[in-house]
Amino acid sequence: MESSTKGFPSVTQPSHLPLRGKSGHSGRNLATLLFEEYSSKIRNGLLNEGDKLPTESALVRTYEVSRTVVREALSRLQAAGLAETRHGIGTFVRASQAAPTLSLNAEELSASVDVMAVLELRIGLETESAGLAALRRTPDQLEGIRAALSAFEQAFQRGEDTVAHDFTFHIRIAEATGNPYFADILRHFGALLIPRKRIVSQPQRDPDYLPRVNREHDEILRAIERQDAESARAAIRIHLTNSRERLRLAQQISGLAASRT
Image (cartoon, rainbow, N blue to C red):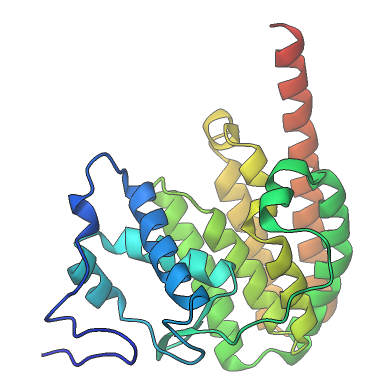
């Protein structure tokens, strides 16, 4: 019998209604519901810093959803800075973060930020982040970067959303710098700034789009594995520069289509 996890009812006596019982919800919407439930508990103090979340298996049984739904919800909690996964141990509630001084928030970003300009900012920020990660990463941090890339690969192979995994990959690199401000800045911007959020039709238009992104990620990982700081900087600069070019082309195509309507 699985024992209770701190802050949660026993899995053998679930107190939650199965999410599958909520008719009309797709798999992705189920992940959103699960994410919202746990983010609400964390923000309202029902779950506190250091509390361990239930295992994937426990969440699957309790909410009667697929493991894919659970993984997407957990990835979104991590991307929001509300939880962190410790390799081989589990997922835990993160410490409360002091309110950042930047005047942007995720909702405003999704509607108003010039993503092209932010990509330019990320090129500078993440180039140095990758170099420091190559020099300073621990074995556990390296494994966390690998795990994020593996989750990305599995998601695109299954045809599932990859944005949360993409964001987690970049966060894991930032965390491996040993300087918390790199990760804090990326978390503040949030997964909404992954350019793919603005190029929703790109994977359908170009079947090699996500495999190409994955290959770029793999080059970054390999350089960090070798502790080759210069190659890591070059690999992530190429990746983000390519992302900027992909976004520029998508915007051109979108503008041309709009002018014809």
